[in-house]
Image 1 (cartoon, rainbow, N blue to C red):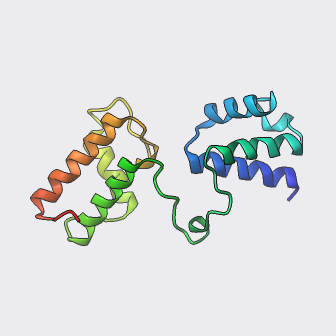
Image 2 (cartoon, rainbow, N blue to C red):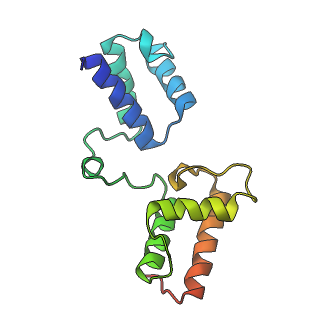
Image 3 (tube, rainbow, N blue to C red):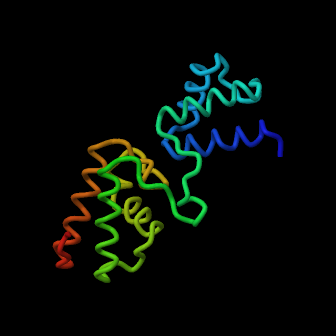
Length: 149
């Protein structure tokens, strides 16, 4: 694999890690290099994009990804959603205590209420929607008599 290909992979990984979608990535690339497409960039320009991602919180050597773990959720309220789900799972109140179960819960519970439901919970950015999920999980904790620690 060429160095340019490695840099492009690193840019895609960085965008995923800090929560940038394709449009936001193109905007970042345009600001950093004056070019919106990675195909038009030299290795030096690709390095500028990686540097811009690092300034925004990208950590290229994140060890959790190599061990099959995901990076922590980008927002504290989303991390709290994961904590609540884990507590419910430990208490035996869930049939699917994994991440896929949480995503399925969000889709089934909020598909009719929200205009669109993300594939993954960590893609949520709307504070009101996240608050809806937190409230629903807290209600489940009360019904299952799960104490929050």
